[in-house]
Length: 95
Length: 477
Image (cartoon, rainbow over all chains, first blue to last red):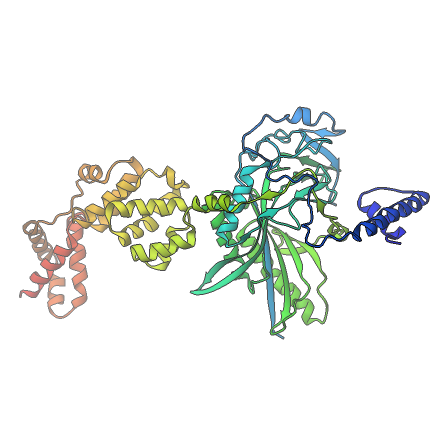
């Protein structure tokens, strides 16, 4: 076992996901098989190889500091369930 | 028991780019809420962030100026947490490989130098702004700030008292503003500081449990919050208790820190490499180009002012507090070639009028050339130092040259010995009683006669000649 049901529950909570008892079992077992596969990969000799941080071996993709037209508040708020005076209204965050 | 504070600071500085870090939206402050937004900074699915090159340049500038090692390759990461002002559910930041590490800045308190280590500098995006209203069951979110570029500068826990912390902050602030990469406005949040502080028994090596302080939006608040926290933690330790590790908010209205509850889990950020952004690679050539374009930094300028102009350290400190003021002073000195008198005028009347009128250096009605001319005519005896203050006031109000003011108001100094001799004689004649007392040995009355003569000439008499004449006349019986 590489991951316990409690850990799965914790990660689900951090991601604000609600799982049923059955789903917790299922994901625990699936995640375990993924992590166990990592153990196989860990067996590969990688001595002297730089760790990758990206799938493409490319660096320095930049844009210049030039302004582009923004959407504007009206369009930005179009999909918001609760647009109040140009703001996104959300349930109160602090008491 | 004696306790020693251990302080480390994290500074977030908003970079003065025109556009956000990963999209072309404007970074202007104070616009209509949510007007500077686009699918990238709103966190819409399927969009791709593209890095603003200027952000990298600015971060490298700061890294060089704080003696950091620039990492040839640095990478991006996602820091995951939920908050309404973070539309993507993660902040793009640098984690495992920041752009720069292991630097320092030197601070000086009362002549004693201290070196404060800088752990790392990394680039990241700012979050939006949430507004809370006590009476409403809602919070309101403005995403204009979401995606504004930041650099975070993390210090080593090297500071041992609140003075050191504030000095370090001021130096950092000064460098950022000198480099013109941050406007340094603490109230608007373009320069923000969080502090980690713990106490340990004096002499102990291990650090104590720290509290993280937030919400301090001025240097004074940082100092007060740290001072409060030292008292609070000392009281807990002296009472035999333990300081809990927590985040606390500075409450400026009550001058206390409050625990910020319910953040325990928020520290599980599950960082992982950002797949949407490729690494940043800084070649030696690029780094050298940026280095060569750096302006003179405040510390270097201060040293140069001391040696080149031979002015006191205090003067050098005041004059180099901003680049604009230092440039103004240097231009005055270049034109009048009297560094100390120029320093007195710039630090004295010039700054006083400027502050009174709440103007920036560039808005001053007295340009450097006019002040240099004024110092010139004091030096050649055309006007006295005292009259010069009146002339300066005239220059400030009218924008005219000192020469014009002197002529208009008839303020030319009287250096004609014959003319002054006559006036001195009249003064002595009019003050016979004092003259007798003086001759009877009351030497301190000399100043009285100088004063009377100056008064009789409306302050225009050349004080040096008046002194000589009086000495001569008074010694005659």
